[in-house]
Amino acid sequence: MASNLAIQTQGLTKQYGQALAVNKLDLEIETGQFYGLLGPNGAGKSTTIHMLTTMTAATSGEAWIAGQQVSADPVAIRRTVGLVFQDSALDRTMSIDENLQFAAAMYNLSPSEADKRIDELLSVFGLQEKRKQKLVALSGGQRRAVDIARGVLHKPKVLFLDEPTIGLDLPNRRAIWRFVEQLRRDEGMTVFLTTHYLEEAAACDHVDFIQQGQLQHGGKPDELIQQLASHILEVNTPNPENVIEQLTPIFGIPIREDEDLSFKISADDVDFHQLQQTLGDSISSMQWRKPNLNDIYLWTFCSPEQGQVA
Amino acid sequence: MSWRPIKAVVGREISKLFRQRARLISAMVRPMIWLLVIGSGVGSMLDAQQQEAYLTFLVPGILAMTLLFASLLSALTLVYDKEFGVMRMMMIAPIAHYWIVLSKLIAATLTAMVHAILLLLILLVLQLINIEIVVSLLLPAFLTSVCCAAIGGLIAVWSKSIDNFAVIMNFFIFPVFFLSGALYPVNQLPEFLRYIVIVNPFSYGVDLLKHAVPNVNTDFSVMTDITVLMVFSISAIIVACWRFSRESVHEPLFHSVPKR
Image 1 (cartoon, each protein chain N blue to C red):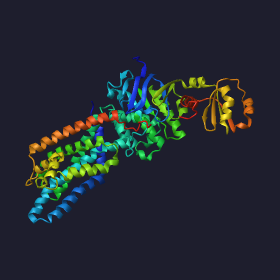
Image 2: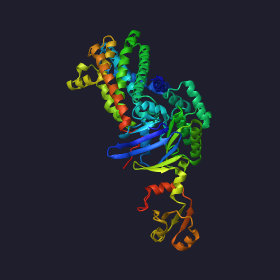
Image 3: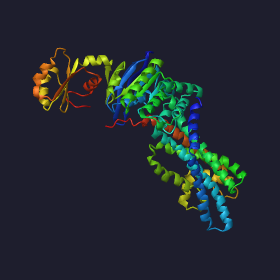
Image 4: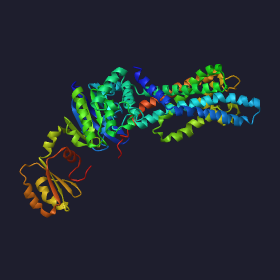
């Protein structure tokens, strides 16, 4: 395999009984990339991460991390990767320091190495003052920060972040992303991210989508957005059928959620005011806006024919 | 393979043991209740000489009980760690997964020995035993606590959550304890109960402890006790390690199975 790949998979599959959690996944992620895997709950994102980090074995197929075959030497893989689990992996009854010292010892760092590294990371997260505090005394955002610090104690080549900002408020989410950016910049880690908050994935170099274990190749967020449409037209109407009938010949089939319709507009010369007049009283409101990653997600996962949100 | 991660897991358990002093003290109360309440209660039905003999008979029994509870409960922290996420921290560490089980069982054995030594000191102060008996009980106590840790390890790797803790208490700890000869001589039991005692590995630990106390009747030979304890412990630990290494493979610990 090519040596500049941080992560490669070939036909990676995970089956639980009859359920296919991940189906024949083929991925190639270059070293140093910030990669995002997006998809709804239960799509197979976590399972993919767990297979790549030896937390669960693949049913079939193979994966390589930094050129090492995952199934050949799980211990070596665990030395190479860092994983921030979706659920906390910390002991709430212990202090930040005790937790991180314990994790560092698990990575075979000497107490003095660990001490230096913990100091370094806590200063990135602004938590030096709280080092001796018990975890129960911290806020959700601070605990998540400690979780991330734990994941990067051993300077992994590839860092896996499984929904790192789930359940956090906006300021905390922003703070977490600043830390991840800084870690990436300072330590040149390849980052593999899964998230529900699509706007966060806009910073990725590359995003792919996964649904029901099936990978749908994406691309660079900016390019995907450009390719999708030049604008999105959102219409709220008490008579969706009429509006669909009127507009589908011009813009194509919309995504429908009850009384909300969303059309992809590719042409640049659509006259918004004219449109407003044509639709007149049959609509309650309409919005004309630039597409974003959420639209990519919706148009990837919601088939307009069914008009249902996945 | 470095010893630092193993030392960290064992150290974490030991520091918790000394941090939770109330638990350590309450673990001493249980055997004392048995000794003073049951011992005196049953003893009151006996004449003075037999009463003293029964108290001596109970010493290895309550020591075994202390080892069983301490070692088994400590091994069961494997289940707590699964539930509270610390297990993730250990599983993502670059060590083979069976080392997690081994470290936990080492910690369980050491925890049980701390309990045992504390209890022996109390019994020494109460003048129920002398220092020679204390010394001769140490090695049997060690082998018994390894055996109990192994039983705990087996239960722990098969338990998914701490919810079934009451089940574990009722179906494992109590039968293992009561059907071991810790409280009464095995040869006086009805035949079918005696068979249960014979297949219970803990019985051999109790018996080995009895060998260390003079004037207490034993049921098996020292050789049989040591052989059974060692063969059982090694086999149980191997099975627990095997099962645990497999666990991450077949049953995700992370609730990640898609529900369809």
